[in-house]
Image 1 (cartoon, helix red, strand yellow):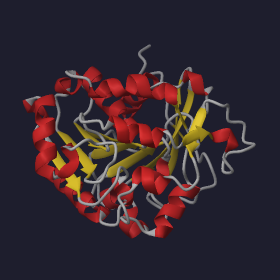
Image 2: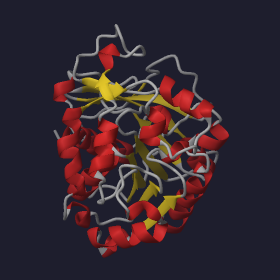
Image 3: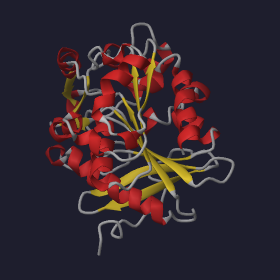
Length: 323
């Protein structure tokens, strides 16, 4: 039996979240690790196109499905309004997904899970027709996961990469990493059984880590802190191989790369849309039909910038013109 057929999605509410009428909670068994929790949301009109969205480290599903001022900051809602279905997935260890020992978490494990999930979506979820066009979307670490999945399995129709570039700012990245500490000692996660290898950001550091200077609503930052998540450093080594040539050159479907101009993890390449296009072009083949977009003033978390609507519009335009 193939790995795809082993994945049997079961509709189930994984927590007490009240979902919109067009959304349903879905659980995907991924042996032997456990279950991935996800939320499937449909647009108001029929569609054969779905975006499978996975958050990066330090975030869960709320990064794509942000609860505060959703008319502005909720990317999932914006894509549904544009006519596309969405499946927002929690990585292992986050949200309602299974929390295995931190040392067992790897980007490779997430790649395998994403591949199985894509197969299940293409076959058809319970009560929903199969989707003929699947676009995977990632942020930061999960962009690396999307790169490796697409370049290895060639089973998706497009890839959206946010918080991703080949021009990694080592100094800025180490600065962000220096704000991490064991989640077991954090007030949000203390007493919940996290092993010492699960990390999170220290309180009060997310503005400097993930936002441009002054480019945030204080209520957004407070919501971000309240919904922050954990990750394991064991997810990084193989995840970073996504930036090593020629990995992205093997992607044979359209790609859009999005970054913030003030992303401290990006070195020079994120100054403007044109600069990002010039820097990234050598790493992608003609089939990628590379599209880039830089959100002015934004830090690493483009979904939460004050002007995130411009980025949502750019992605919607790419989707419409490409798929």
